[in-house]
Image (cartoon, one colour):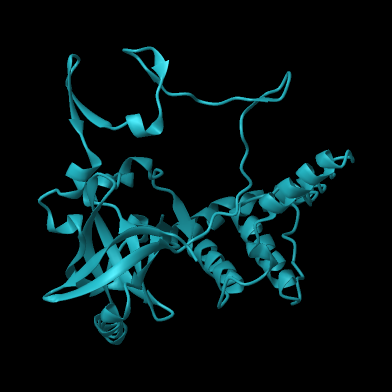
Length: 300
């Protein structure tokens, strides 16, 4: 059973739903400690008081706000818990909006909201069903870890999920990162759409969506523990040749997508230009350019 991260209530108009917040995800990453490699002694970070020049215990450490170099105001956890904010003890629902109106870049970590006992079961179920039937998500405000936050509530398998959200001013403007305008032909865009169609699937089940890095790291640790040779890395796929242009890369990608689905992956290679071919086509170049100029092109 996951541990409770926060306890409080959901405030839905005049309806109050007592809840416990638990993490909706698990981290299976392999973690390392720091060691002195000469003697494999553990390297630790110790906390020292600058005034007394001694190591201090965890129960001696608290929060402080620096007003100036010589003046610090201590702030106790109990005082933070009594902040004059409704969101300090409750998740306040502010609005209901269509899910597609929320930019995914604003959505962060997910938490399950568990009803706190039988008294919370009915209002919890009421809110869950209301969310399901309206096909909307709730936008809420709550205060955790020393700041007020924005959140999104939705339903997953009969459980209400809270997602942390970024405020508007926390999202950087990507305009300066956009590339300069380039020209694309309709054929290139159509081929890219063809590739998307070939790579479209209904779920994320399969070997492609397995954490191979953690598995490979576990094999390295096992080999070193047992004194065996380290696993050899697989040889990278040998490229078939230099990619001539964007269209060729797209066509080869479509062929690979077909092959991965057991379909015919035959690729019709573009004819290679020989010196004789270039010479023969030289008189027709101007006509070709004029015809191409009439062809509409799309800017990216």
